[in-house]
Amino acid sequence: MEFKEAKNKFVQTWGALGSQWGINKTMAQIHALLMVSHEPISMEDIMDELQISRGNASMNLRALMDWGIVYKEYKAGERKEFFTAEKDLDELAVKISRERSKREIKPALKVLKEVSALKSDGTAAEKHFVDQTTKLYDFVLKADNVLDKITEYKDNWLAKLVVKIMK
Image (cartoon, rainbow, N blue to C red; front, side, top):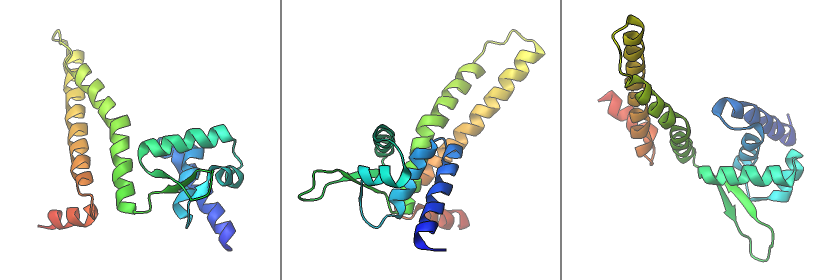
């Protein structure tokens, strides 16, 4: 497999996985392209490489910057804006975990807390509902707390977690 073919296959595969991670295909493809590029890329080059419109590129670059995993860079003498992705995989994992927690887990916890606070009139169905949603809230809260602890370890958090677990 040649470089261009391998790069394209990676970008396409990463894009396909994006929908499973809660982001759109183009956003994941832009991220993949920037992640494997050895130097910052202009929006025009991103548009050409992925065959997407300026609006699509702009919107998805902004979203990736909001996540904190893509950065704008300036080159002296250039009027174009250039973009690069977070290259540190530990830092990338931490930022994605925090963003997903903020966008997905925290809102789910809010709903679970609200519905599990239902004032039961004593029927078996209501008691079961409150019991199950309370258990689910407790479980998701514990999982979110674990995720928070993991992401607190910015420098090599995975190794530190493994060492802590092994003790």
